[in-house]
Length: 248
Image (cartoon, rainbow, N blue to C red; front, side, top):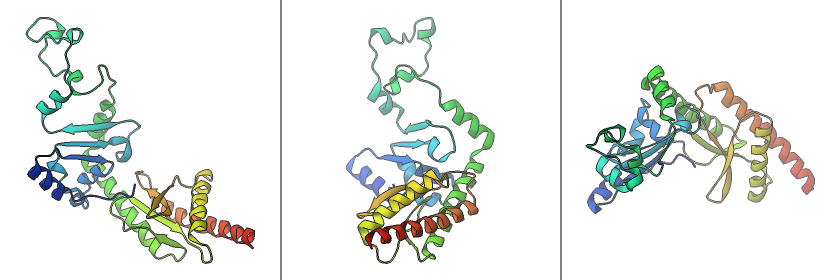
């Protein structure tokens, strides 16, 4: 996952022209829509027939809080509605089953479900979308700042230009081939995690292994990014030195 964004407007045009259903997997990236200086990155998303996104990925909420929006209520209902006798709604009759309200069973696989939407509703009601937008923009700005530091550091190499909040980079060391660098960066990932410095992961891009830093915490500060960079350089140098010693 490198936070790449497709040309949503062109995809919407294609789907409209060909009569296709336009679904957008917004995951965490959809939340750029409320970031004041980054919403243009997801332009065209508003034309989707359905949109999926997770509030636990970039709205700072506990796992799991996912959401799917479907533009056509009728299409949504027809896709899932099934009313055998034991699920009869009894519209027009008296009693609880006669209440003419939407039955959630008609809009998904679950016959019964929990209420994870409550924590999302309460949090948004308390904090407001403007504050969330500001914090999401802050994470995006921090990712761009981290990428600038990486590009200015000889020991580090940026994999791709940063678009949202994900920065993919690796430690490089002269004298080590690509295979050794892949193993080295994988070890850096483990060392960072076990030291409690940062929970980065690794990702393979064009056959090369990179460290994957996704900034999704509203408490992240510049000093956290500086600590990450210095730790990667320190650990990389130590591991490269031991690798060269073994090779020698």
